Image (cartoon, rainbow, N blue to C red):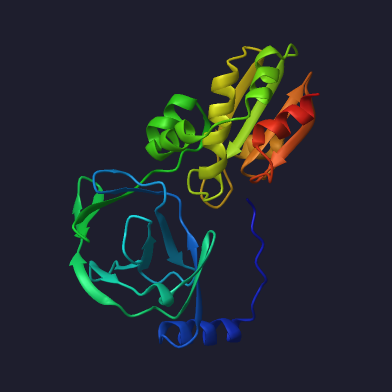
Length: 261
């Protein structure tokens, strides 16, 4: 989803950056969904990786499989255990007071393009995935992001809506705008994949379009369909019926059905 941030005067920015670096002031961290996480030998869809908005070389990893959040010092290749009280988690964001201190529990190593370490008796593998840009196939998306497979298989769509979509008779183009680095997309896109897999209706022409980091590419598709992501755009006879932006508050298949009725 597009996030608009207020412009902060340079002097205020420098004061904020200095205080955060010194560990005294507030610091906001944003989730980066480019990371694929395995803990204990299997994909962990509860894991979240956050990076500070002032671009310091640290990450915070949270997971239901870990006893406590972890601070990853990219400069020194150290992993430190934090206290739960060190962070304030709010969905795709974390607030801390500067860079929190912690107890060193491990060092990470780079192996086969992934960062690996052990903590709480479990192996942790963090892989940074390349961004998918431009129109792509569902099979490529699922191969690129194995956690999408887990999320897709876990989702149980409304059976009544699936029956409607399975028997729907009008040819409809479904354009799905997404970004593999977007924290909201990792929740929405697997559900969309599951819904149209279950519907199995050839009347739906599916198009999946990946957006580059920064939102500038692919330019032609962005110019045509706009810069909303994640977005499910329903088109008939060349005209847009409606679009679903972000994660709806009701099951996404129900929203799709409401648009098509």
